[in-house]
Length: 88
Image 1 (spheres, helix red, strand yellow):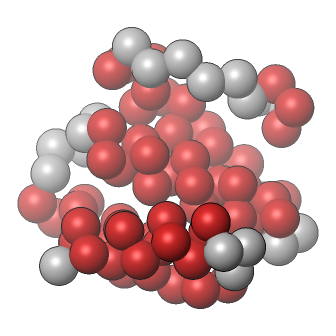
Image 2 (cartoon, rainbow, N blue to C red; image 1 turned 135 degrees about the vertical axis):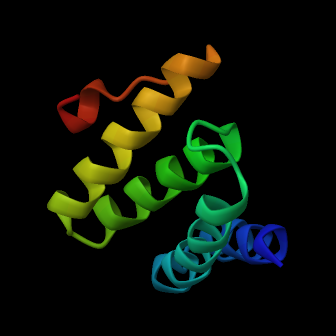
């Protein structure tokens, strides 16, 4: 179920529907946080995408929270992403 929500979120994001992407990514994150270890890359990817959507929706506080969490998870997993344009 969490993977289905995540994939729906990605699809809505590709369609430019950030409100819908946030809705499904939040559901996916809620489930994954209960079944995966805290630094699992799926959680990092969801946080990254949520950060981007919150940024697009003008919610800088939530965007920074999600990007910060994604950055920490990505670092642990050896994933390189540039967050400098978001001030991180």
